[in-house]
Length: 182
Image 1 (cartoon, rainbow, N blue to C red):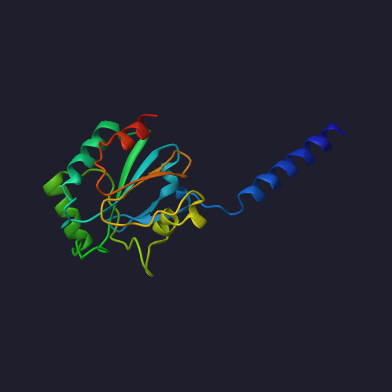
Image 2: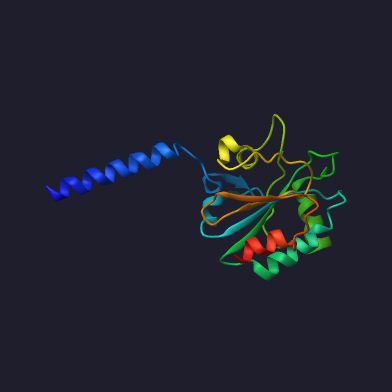
């Protein structure tokens, strides 16, 4: 009898948990494409905090690549990673091909953090991962439309949206550093 009772309680608990969060996706449920054209399952980042940044090579904020790389060098590893998503959504400030973008990032800024293939971060052709990042009905936390290049999304170790930093927020801002360190 005890076994049946425990089993019934476990089934009820699982059903209740699913009802509270039916089908909710996390960041880890997506697979994206690297700048080199390879599949990159975001599930491999479970247990890490992730800073997601939409980038552009011809923007006033482009010099943030330098501090993003320094942030990655300081904190990157088992607990933290940065992922760049080049996008040409704002005044055509990322016109290059994936090959050109990679060359620019590595030669000018020494970028070693993962860069993904160029995508759209808003509009009718928004990439699925950015749809999730920007829409409360998908991420369960907040609406956070991308307003400009170098907007930063903070993803916790469980793949949940933890916060957003504006384009003008520098990579070493208190908001970002405190989030990484806590």
